[in-house]
Length: 260
Image 1: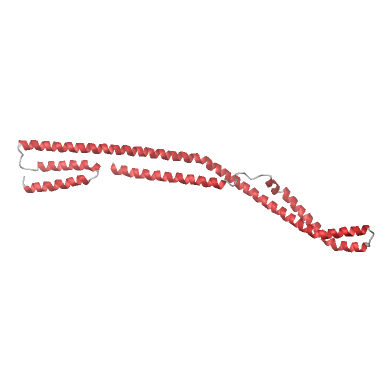
Image 2: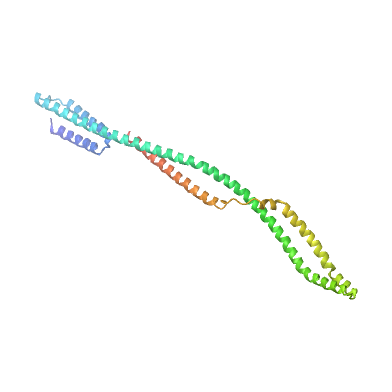
């Protein structure tokens, strides 16, 4: 064999072996086989036959290379099998976690339905409270008007009392009649206002306000916002957990596709 042929073979072998060392584990077996084939092709292209002993040595060398290649392939296959099993275990754990999250979400649905019912009841109670407030405001307005009229009528009542006492003492009735004329307008205004206020109070007592006051508000009326906030936090935590599981599953799928 000429030195030129040997140098060429050495450069090819060195470059090929460096490629094997830098390749991914699942690609090394293929590159080793390609190297062995390249060496066999190179030997087949030699024109000078080898003596018997070198031929035997050459066969032993190729046998050793084949043994090394088979051992490396077995080791790579065993490692890939272990990695696949680990990935299957992680996939099973991820599926179990997703199933548990879905079960927890399904368990929360009755509470969500209960909160919806509470919200509907709360809306009805708010409507009743609004009606009660309106009725109470009408009653308060009527009572305030009656109190103001009573304050205005108090002097007239005192004056009428004094006139009645003077009339019983046989005093001059002319003064009594003049005083009655002065308070007549106040008495008429009070009567009209009292009658209007009485009608308004009767309407308020016989209308929706009286019925609304008989229905007490639910004791947990103010607890509904806190329950909604707690449920929202739980749902957000479940959404984050599901999103994390989905991202992990996608990463595992990409890893499996890259290695298979």
